[in-house]
Length: 156
Ligand SMILES: [Zn+2]
Image (cartoon, rainbow, N blue to C red):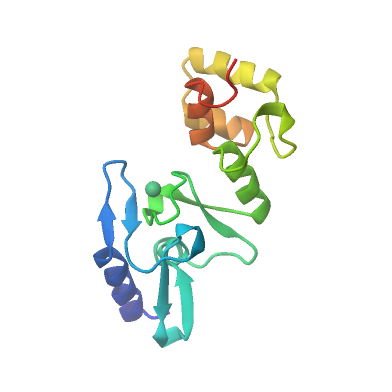
């Protein structure tokens, strides 16, 4: 992709986006199922999911087999700071953590956490660790930790 095309695509993505108070930059153009933004790039004879295109424009090409996932759990969001790469399996885990799957707690076979781990997480948070650092330690998202701490998931 040449620089001129990159610039042109970035401009069209931004012109079709709205900044939300959360910091999300939501694509308000065409949407695909799952609420993902969708853009055709005739120059490349290709269509892109907008968050994926934004990731490529910002950080470079995406290794094969990886998906662009949202820390903010907001599919139309394009804010590069809210995007990260993961496998399809991460995507499933991420969806579970963010409560997009039915089923709660240990009954959910997809869940990565257990009640013991949740108790540890709550204790670590009291010691003053940030959500992000706890999240990294347990291999879940910051949003997942926030929900645990706020008792939105894993209610005791
Ligand atoms: Zn976002």
